[in-house]
View 1 (tube, one colour):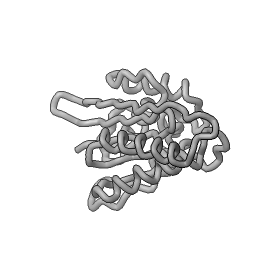
View 2 (view 1 turned 45 degrees about the horizontal axis):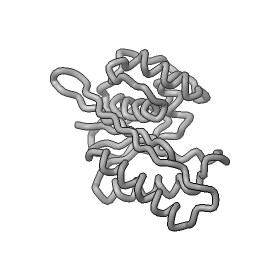
View 3 (view 1 turned 30 degrees about the vertical axis):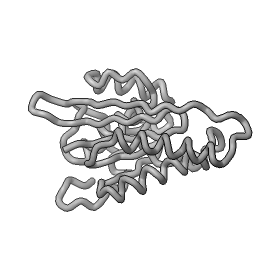
Amino acid sequence: MLVTGLDLSLTGSGVVTIRRTTEGWRFAKHLVESKSLPKGASLEQWAARQVSIADQVIAATPPGLIVIEAPSHGSKFGNPHERAGVWWRVVHALVARGDRIASVSPATRAKYATGSGTAKKPAVVAALRESIPAAAITDHNLADALALAALGWRHLGVPVEASIGAKQLEACRAVRWPHNGGEKSW
């Protein structure tokens, strides 16, 4: 079984797949980077960038349970409309492929990683470096994706972390998990 966390972005999308083996946990990490477009870029340039990002994310995502960070609906910066285009393109492809997908709000992802839904990126990175040191996280995009994948494994009843706090467990119950036949559900 594989669980993959996806943190989509226009500049750096984190893809972390966690596999459970007889030797322990294995982590595959991919950072899909994209350069910003010049001011006044055409619709064709935006479309090409979205397709490129989405295609690279999809290629780096093996079939399994996918836990994707939901769009931040309160975001006014960072081209939220264009980010949504990437998000939907990835979701459509994964659904068509037959993957099971759970969408997790940014606040829930932060709460699972740190115990606080308002935790900033450095706090998430630090918390995950401490709780899952074997993942060797070096980037906040990968940290977010790691938190999402770990949340997926906890949902399946096989936690990656040794232990988490009560606030972090609350985050598990805030996720709408896919209907997947007898697997653990909160």
